[in-house]
Amino acid sequence: MKGFPFVRLACLLSVLPTVLVAAEHWKVQYFYDQNKSTLAIVDLQFPSATRGVAVGTIVEGRRRRHVSIVTSDGGAHWQLVDLKDQPISLFFLSENLGWMVTDKGLWETTEAGKSWRKIPGLPSNMVRVHFTDEKHGIAVGAKKRVDVTEDGGAHWTPMPAAAEPPGEDKYSVYNWIAFATPNVGLVSGWNHPPRHNAPLFPEWMSPVEAMSQRETPHLSYSLVTNDGGKTWTPHSSSVFGAISRIRFGPTGQGLGLIEYSNAFRFPAEAYKIDWKTGKSATVFRDRKFAISDVWLTPDGTAYLSGVIVAGELRNVVPGKVQVLRSKDYASWSEIPVDYRASANRTTLAVFDSDHMWMATDNGMILKLEK
Image 1 (cartoon, helix red, strand yellow):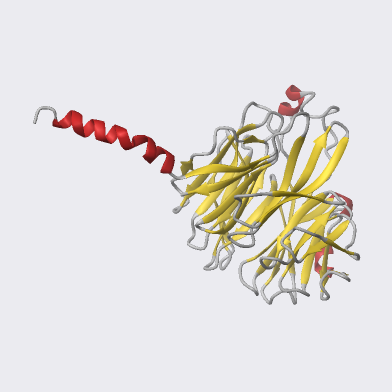
Image 2 (cartoon, one colour; image 1 turned 45 degrees about the vertical axis):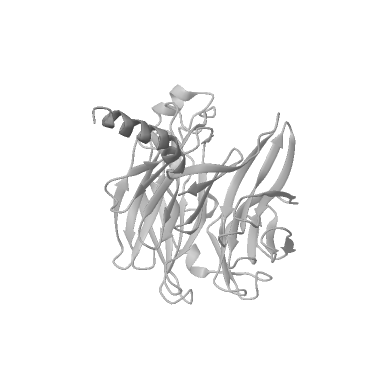
């Protein structure tokens, strides 16, 4: 009997490594690790549990190679596919049907990103599209432009409400589209004129001067529909930072992200939204956590992804990737991430609670293993 505690301890130690390996964590599935070249992933989408598409640009010296990285087996294997234009964003309506906005127009795939067909007609300087079915879609972009299509993107018509908010067009952009239900939707953007006392040199060249600048408020834009896009109501308000992400849940909850400049005391701030009442409140902000994406699962669980700030000047030196999760928006738990994952920005792609992926802007794609 005297040896029982030691036998028991030995048994526990023998299974400990297995327990650690099996614990929930973000595991690397793809990593572009090539000498003298880097892959900057700008967007990632998983329209099903098996099919996923990432897009970005491989940089090697002065050479640029635009690519998509596709999988048809949930990320077990990935294939590089060359693109003709520089990708900006993705939107998928179904497992196979999706659209890609590039610096030169709009492309459509019916093969989950394995091949693309260009659709002429999209106005220039657009950054994102959202389709409610194969024919009806919305495109948003620079110069206070929001357009709609009724023929799958072949022709686009400007939305008059988008031009109504105050502010010069040349300093304005709409950048995000989100629908909570087929009827309730939101387009967001901002007006950000240049500052008269802006630093002479880029922030990375003059960090002291950059840190001495103060964040100033500017106009935030939103267009709201409650009838599936038949009519849109414009709103504007003065805020700090820029709204970069909005995710809606099905029962009234939402999660948004505001990102700030180096001059602000926080790099980013996550806030919850009640789209039925219009109320919002901050749920997370930390000086050392630069959030770059948020996600809200159907059960209301919130995820924040980003990087730990490596220095006073953000977005210069890549930081360690971090992911936090919360069910009550008050207490947040960290999910372990592969130690090799470092980046300036991250992108989440979630099919359901059991199939979640994350991409970094330095060529890594990870999956949440449970």
